[in-house]
Length: 174
Image (cartoon, rainbow, N blue to C red; front, side):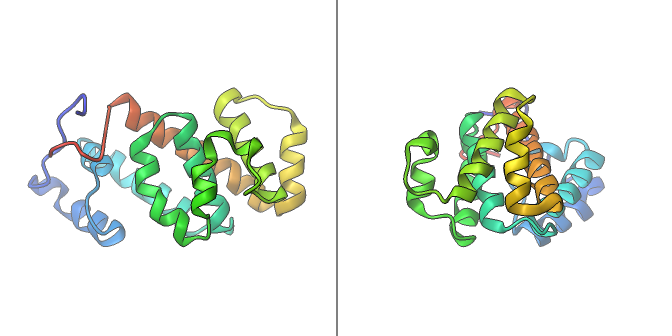
């Protein structure tokens, strides 16, 4: 159960934003219903995360793989549950999702995915990391996609921390 009540979707002040969220996401997820306590925050969050998920050149499988890994490392089950369908649609396999807890011991990841996951872990767990990790990713993806990867990992660390700080879960009544 969330630490705060979810915002009312019937508030006329948020009606246009509720319509936009529904149009872009299919429904108002628990995350957005909590964010709607602050319409400017919800609007900025929606724009930023839509850009991260839909407008970058970073390949979708790598994006979803790091989102799932961030969710796992940070203990954010809501985030993980929301992204399983996206990950599978983008080409992440079920065995890869199953092995995320111990990805280093798994044979289900390509060398490129291993470099990406190593950087994801370093950013998520340590913040400061050896530059060789970024160099390895840059060698695989180029500078633009390396920046997009780092931004994606950072963005979803923000998401998981928000979700867990407020105890937002997909089975919460609203």
